[in-house]
Structure formats: C-alpha cells, structure tokens
Image 1 (cartoon, rainbow, N blue to C red):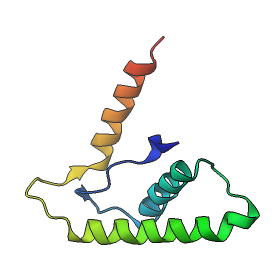
Image 2: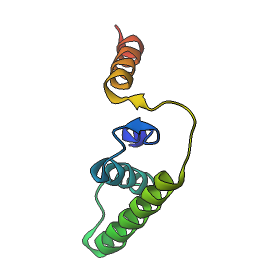
Image 3: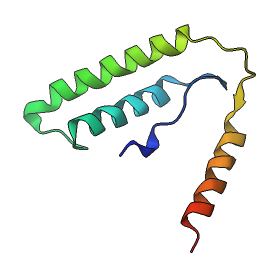
Image 4: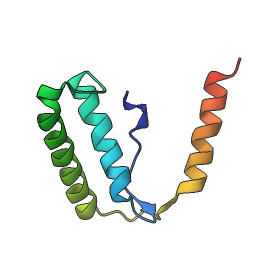
Length: 89
C-alpha cells in the first residue's frame, strides 16, 4: 500500500497539495489496514487524512536544505529504470 508515498521535499516545483494529500491517504490506509473504511469509520478516516496532510505541509514548509532542488522528471526516470531492473523477467 505505501509504495506510492514518495519523497516530497526538495523538488522544483514544490510538492502540490494533491501530492501531499495522496501521501497522507496512503499513510492512513497503511496504518488503518484497509484501503476503504467502513461507513462507521469514514469520518475518522477523513479526519486522519486531513491531519496527516496538514502536518506534512507544515513539515515541508519548515524544512531547509543546501542541496539543489531535484528535477521531478529525472527522478521519475530513475524510478522507472529501477522498476524495470527489479521486475525484469
């Protein structure tokens, strides 16, 4: 479930709200142990996603680095190359 959580810090352009929300959703799914909560747990699930997303955005806003920002396309190409190597038949 958590394979979709990617590094969000130090990219140009910075991580979008949608990327942060997707990472928060994956995290809450992993912790909850399910991809879809029951109707009885939907409100708690949604509240947890919002809280994790807010904490993540606050963290990203406060982090500092001296490293140059990474290029999203280059990093995606590296990930595809690793996946091809890992899943090659």
